[in-house]
Image (cartoon, rainbow, N blue to C red; front, side, top):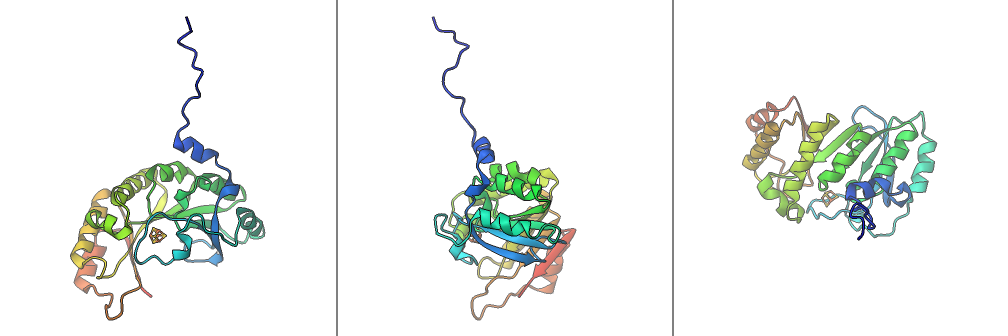
Length: 246
Ligand code: SF4
């Protein structure tokens, strides 16, 4: 009779474990900004644009980065070679996209960058809360897009369930203690000022203290309009509140 304590099949490997094991060399890179002073607060940084995003926001500024399989002019090896020339000159490296957490190689890439002595930042839409939670120990700062109130989020991204995923990511981020900023790209054609206020109320109730309202490419003839009274009401709910317009 076989010994029931002996298991001959392989133990299932969790997604998180596979994610952690992926080689950084596999990171698909769509582009590189060699120097920025605005994408990682308080730091001079380079920005690595990760290729691929499964969402389809109508106002996406980086449509060339959406196709995960698209050919690019960059490799991870080229990025590393560049970063080695910037040791002691740059403070940090930002992983942006596209959606960086789409890629299993992200944790290894973050670890490699930290070994070179750089601080690390992530720009994400929060579409993979489990993957975000796994890389939070490797991050010094996160910019998390909160695209819309929960009841409008999925329509904006074209991805069912995306709003709930983003909220799970937000909870993980807030629980981690990692520095962050929540950001919302907005104009009145996306959703109205009342919905924007409802979003602010929701974020404040979740414990968000850093929120930025970002300018958007506004359709012709549609100004970025929010009254000073509404703005005062929005900003009063956050210890750190910013409005960014072109
Ligand atoms: S999540 Fe970001 S990269 Fe993806 S479609 Fe939306 S705006 Fe573009």
